[in-house]
Length: 289
Image: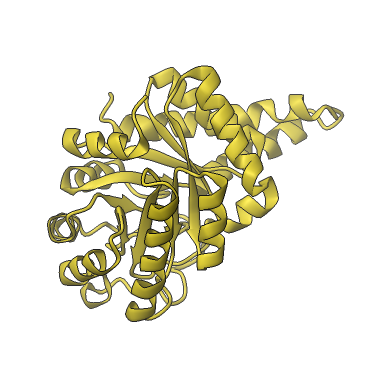
């Protein structure tokens, strides 16, 4: 089986993207694994700091490692949005496949400093661990939003520039870069998210020289996904849409059968609902009709 680095490189060469889906529970885990296995596609399972605290840092690693070995399928684990060097070190020591240091809210210089420390530590432990940097603030919450997240600005002057991206990658040595290109975390209520600046994606990919990661993919259109991938995005993150699918299916299940008390029966419908979302997104990302 190839390493995650090799799968990312292959995705870029073929103008497709690897789907990255976050989990908070075992139902989400199996929804992603079954969808990826059924389509015979690699997949990345993400756990943010909050999700890791709920599931367990090493427990999440054990889940993914076991499934990868038993199914002989490329399932990888990413430590999503990590905000300190200590927590980056924690997941590197635990054997994660990749980690994101999110310094989007701090100064450029401080972001460079900590990201570089993360890269150097990862290299000293395992050169196959991918380190992703984030440049440009797009919000933090994976939830339904009434408006653009506070602090997020979508004007051209506020998005990540190719020049910034080039400097950031050169100074930090990151393997992957998550830029702000019109994307937002979460999903706007009652409508589609803002359009992605595709031209900017392409310019950043050329300038940075590393694969790009699109965060906040929930709520974006199929057209924007395809165009972004063609322009240089190799990984796409989805979380909010999975949470919505879980909530809606769970609510319906409890309404239809309020006397059911067996968790494995109650959770069957939410699992299938999330699996359908993952299958649909993986097909978009891999241009499967």
